Length: 263
Image (cartoon, rainbow, N blue to C red; front, side, top):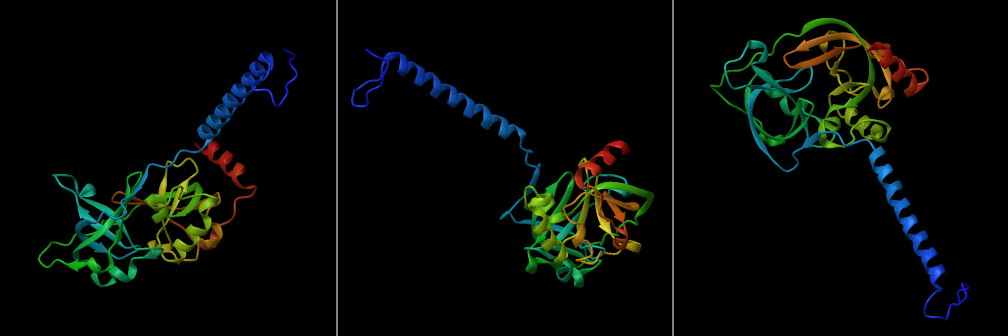
């Protein structure tokens, strides 16, 4: 039979059918290879968690400033520096918990909420009506921050709620609009170094909370930030003056190169 294919015949010529099978198999293998390369080249999701819908009970002491925090006693006989865990507190949605905790500053309380956590940092999304003072309980005293000296770090400003687990990814340009809205709602800002190894809670001069919109212009872009590094319990803080922030010239590449040279 001729290799010329005639459409109304039940089968194609043997040599032509064999060639077509090889072409289809080759295209299939190429598609699998391309798909595998694309999957492997994607950044993996961060190991972050939001226990949505899973309410837990917490007992601790409310510290209202610079950002709402719950001090929770750690079990066991440990040193004073490690006696308490610090849980940042936020309200549902893109809102801070300042109004929820203002009446309980310095008091031992019981509350309910959902855990948000990543890289050793934990946050609680508080159920608004669940906070109650616990008379008779001993209030914890927040440790004073230790000054570790000036620091220069390259990285990115993010909103802590999304970055720690509510959104994934919770950083970068894809998350810029969401982060801007969260920070404008009073969610505590944190600064992530370019290599992801350092994480600082950002505060203003004299350790005060930063104004909600003071960082809007610098969200989700690489910047070089100068400040005073502080340590309070298990929390690292970076005291900055937002008026002195500047955009990093030439964007991402220059910031990453400078970060590598500082290691």
